[in-house]
Image (tube, rainbow, N blue to C red; front, side, top):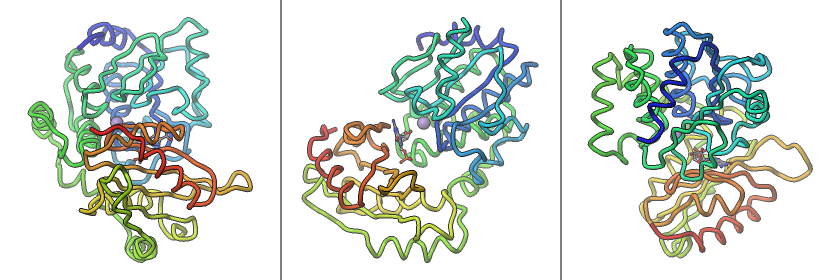
Length: 331
Ligand code: 5GP
Ligand code: MN
């Protein structure tokens, strides 16, 4: 892989490292940052991990932070060391921590970008970017092997969390994906426990919420270039009794609909103006490229899993998504 040796050398000599994941982090963003952070901590470096939003780490991912490396964005010190951005294709996806990239570069210090998004804009001084990697965790694993780091159970658990979620439970996997997973299990990961904690652990209140949301789901068989579109809308009212984790899990139900090649879930976000605001999740069963559709609306992601934010009524936003999907490239 290009640049791996150079990036490993940069990490090997770093004594102070700030690792950032994208806003509203998933298991790949935080798992990758915490795994690399722990490895560097064990080598003696001063290390902290943070994200621009929200302040607190998502509840389902807290067990990944064995060493207490996570620092809320508002408490993140300005540091004199290396900045590492993980799973983050553009500085904008760092949210309110985005200005750190320019600040670090202006001070003549290094920014290492580790990512697997095809849309990465190479905003660092060093890059380990490979859009053929299934997860950012795969790239971190390669870096740790290059560094000669011993993979202990907490590191392995963080990497496994990223790998299992970004491959949708090893649905998108190559032989090398399973070879990496095998090494992580040999390091002591309990796969059932990890997946239950980060994917399959919901309060009972999720069921009435799902019922409320799914009763309004619609199937539009002719949309998404004829592959079919299934969509559902989660309003703030429907989500009032559950966590963000339950809201994010709705798309995993909707994407399992046989008649729909594309699933879309609109999730109402807290208002910051008079118009309604939504974060949108798009999933493709493999027929059309949803990252192109998300990109048209100012978002991004991967060909089969993408997202964006949008303003307006649910119907207005769905209209824009239908249009963007009608132009999305076939896979
Ligand atoms: P999710 O639907 O799980 O939030 O996101 C799926 C994928 O799309 C992830 O790779 C995520 O990074 C990306 N994504 C989600 N929302 C946005 C967005 O607003 N902008 C960009 N650039 N990517 C997004
Ligand atoms: Mn990822």
